[in-house]
Image 1 (cartoon, rainbow, N blue to C red):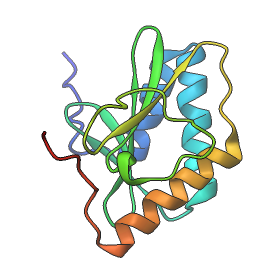
Image 2: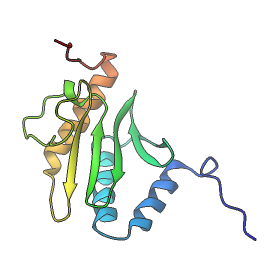
Image 3: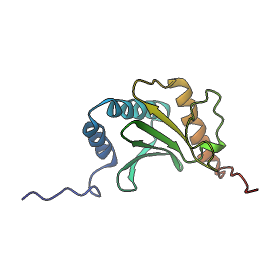
Image 4: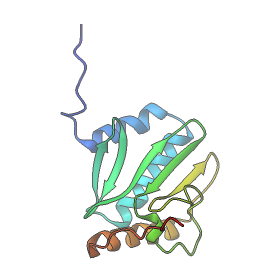
Length: 138
């Protein structure tokens, strides 16, 4: 009987590769494309594997996560509420105090330059040491 390989011993990049391969459909292609855009924007971004199987990209703090569901690939920016989004890529979690997300459905294309600008803005916010702006309860 083969022993299961612990995810704790595998590099995050390998685990993300495996996730993309496991998906084997448009979601894997989309996650792979968004991963590539993150790497193009910030070549030294760190890939992590957190929360029992979520790809995470960090640079001086979390930039975003990449989750895959049946009907969407979701990229959640931890401090998205504090980021300017002139291209209006954020289309999910819009009422949250800190996070904003981009839900990508099958067949949808994301503006690569606008996405890279969000990545750069998230990294700049992380590097500044500023906390995400939060809404105050009324």
